[in-house]
Amino acid sequence: MEQGRAREAAIPPSGAPRVPGQTRNDARGEHTHGEHTHGEHTHNEHTHNEHTHGGPPPPRAVHRHSVRGQILAALRTALVDGDLVPGEVYSAPALGERFGVSATPVREAMQQLSIEGAVEVVPNRGFRVTERSARELAELAEVRAMIEVPVMLRLARSVPAARWAELRPLAEATTEAAATGDRAGYAECDRAFHRAVLALAGNRQLVQVADDLHRRSQWPLTAAPVARRGDLVADAAEHLALLDALCAQDLPVVQALVREHFTGSVL
Image 1: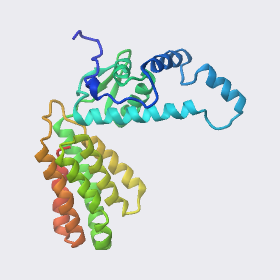
Image 2: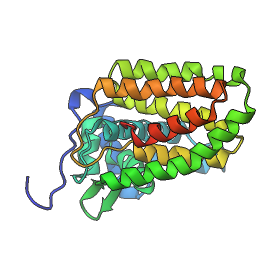
Image 3: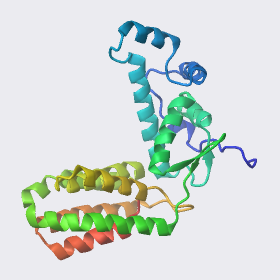
Image 4: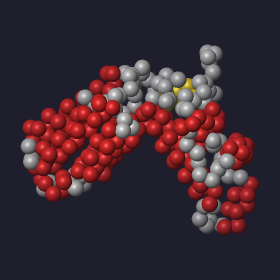
């Protein structure tokens, strides 16, 4: 690979998601219009907007938002699975080609990932996947523990066992995803379980901040080995153990489990 050139996406073409109802030719034409107009509207969309005089957005704009959301989800999965390698630079056109879409929704999705800290913009080249160290992961675990441990201890004292039992399906979903070795699926289930637990505190800002920290802790380390299925299963089992401790209002066990879960998390 030549120095200074953006690395082509490492996402296997066979696993590249397709946008429903969009062909590769559509994507290329869309890319041409988007680049010329510095936006997302074609000539027909401008004409439509002029006739609607402030009416609802045209269907194509809604479709665009859906495409961006699908690409963002696919890129997040690629990050967790390690298909996007830390330190490597990826160009939006190359990723768009593999996804079967134009570069525009890829850039939009990458901009969101840049805000989240998963990638950084490399002028005139694309986006570099952030390289993370073990120290950064430990710092994230410490901050998560500072936020979530006191909240869970407070909830353990006040939330009835029946409410905790309602969360058991979410905990079981993590074990099912872990059993299949689905890293990306496990990551989603893991965050869903923690969001549901913290939501019982009734503080939406708390849930949002904790979920952002949780997502960042799931990005792979530089040259980190892929988590084995057994590691995922063990990590998921802690969710069920935590629910049991919360139902029993066993505060020392709750505190120990949450801290161990953060420091020993495989994602």
